[in-house]
Image (cartoon, rainbow, N blue to C red; front, side, top):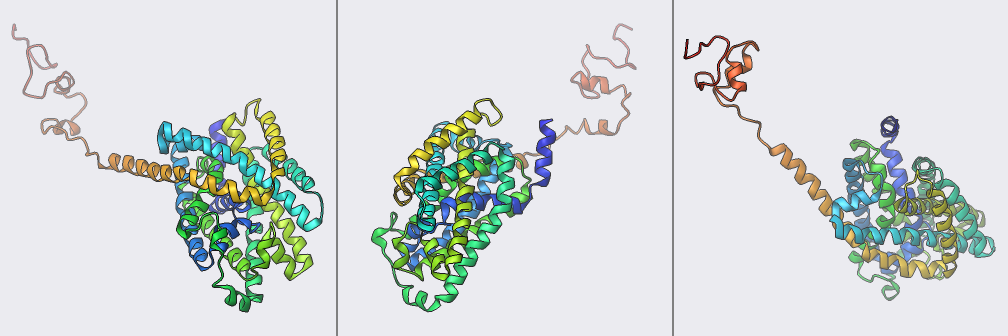
Length: 413
């Protein structure tokens, strides 16, 4: 029964679904609020735009690596992928970082929902965090297929909304963007070097993403994996680029708010501000869902009796931790996990090398070469009297005294 279910899932999982789930996993912790983009790219000015380009390529490459290794291993958890890629010691360290940050990202998403409710609707932050945790809890209890299904519908809408707002802002404020293009505030960036910032940004996002991408690779075919990784990385790169440009077009005002993109939307129209607030809530929701599922499935079997209790307990603790505040959590937790996540990126490179080396080794093995004396037997009749001597370890014309065929006579005769 399990095999039948897996085959059905593999058959219907398309590149679009993989890309949508990839984007949906990253979009909340990655860029929808604008605070993450501001800290990793916006503060760096023009160099931040170059960093966005590098990030998009890294998302494609490492996203493919996670999916591909998961596919080859038929993974049901990210643990199988990182243990294969990094070995026991490094795999254990990386797994600890991932498990910690999955819970940390869940906490940040709860804080982000609270900040959004406070900034946009004037409600206490605790209300937003509570609503987010309840919605996340219900979705995760539906399992991995529920997550893929939810993100397949939400992620394209979220990405199009982000792109639409970003492109509209850039078009309207093109003159101001041209004036501000040389602006930077490097001293405020948690990672001042633009190349390292791009790697760090990719790293912390994939620490979240691997929890969903690895088991998804286990139920997808190779063609869908390749297309999904490319489309996912491209979509994430375009989203990050438009948000960076939108923020640069509205500095320094935009950087004063915990959710810069909500401020940008409100500048265009109060109604648009409310609309983007809903979009942002949905993007936070998708990342919260993937984080909670990844965290809980790492600690216990999703089909086991303890999964439901763990999901409920983790949601409650994350809600309490979210009271620290959104901006503080983004500026401290994300960069720290990004550095620790470099072990994950390195392990994935090594994991791909191991897979390719094994495949190449298997392909390079020569075909077995038969002795010339055996080749005539390939075309001979199975009843040929010489075959019995071959099976006994002899070749025709080289029999010992203990091996005879049906047509031979005993030396005593």
